[in-house]
Length: 413
Image (tube, rainbow, N blue to C red; front, side, top):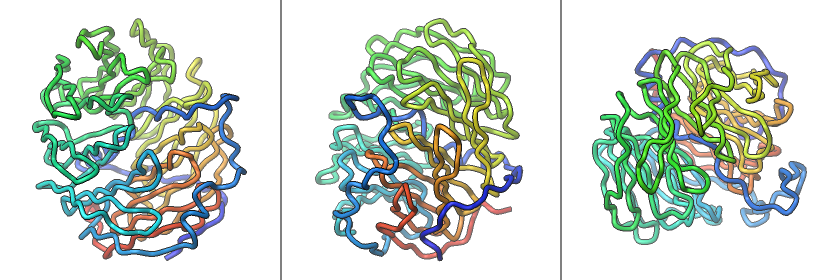
């Protein structure tokens, strides 16, 4: 097993044939909505990628621990303070780990089905877990008390499913209705009605004033978070949407479709600005760069693409994976993006040029998730082999590894 790989020449990715069952699994495990808000910086410029890696000294030399999950790890995410890591297992549990010691917290967050996505609230006090049976649960991070169970949802969480002040969570239902919940009491604040089919993503705007939803009915809708009033319905995709994401300033939105196309819309009017066409097969991710006028898309064709959202010009084609992508995300600084693939690799790319920075080939099976730490210095990946790897985003050097028992790839034909 290799845990460190330097950049390698890119190769043209194979177009993967993806069954409907696999696509559903990717959509459930995606949870990558719009990009998270960038940290405040006086210069407003992305962090220097050559800067010293804060936190590396605190983590010390590379260490290996047991993951504690009995099977694949479907998602992993850093806490806002970057001191802990939460993992989601196909064994129906989520677990929190101390990065400095590798020790698991005593709390085990349990579901009756595979846990597909996990997210900390922005203040780090609440944990949301989503399961393959559609249930979403809210937990107290300290103590592990179950605050609420939200049934009959679609089992999807995005980066911005929590409101910026952590007081609310928005979820999408299989019945086409989105719901806003109080994260302290678990009470229902209001419903957003409705789409004509399953909701595939639901996120808050950066200021918390609006909610964006997407659906298999082919539309994306913008709602007033306080009143639930529908402001805009963006309609025009001939097939269902995988997700939608707002631009940092909230003026535009991007929608990603199962037909491989994406569209950029004016968020105030619902007018199409441009169409982004070029992928072969369904998309799994789309997001605006937190800093700068560009949009990223990623698909089951094994490629990610960077576009100019103003005129649809393709700026960079990110090739090299040899299997369908499961997810793609920007770092908060907007300087890099990470892709994860069923080919067993994750790759970090320069978001301005599309140049490959580092290839991460530590997994022995499909990689289900990849995400940056809040400061952009680390990447965490989780996979079908039951392992979780925390590595340097700049060099690929292993920092912390949680090993798991190798399991068969149940998604293979």
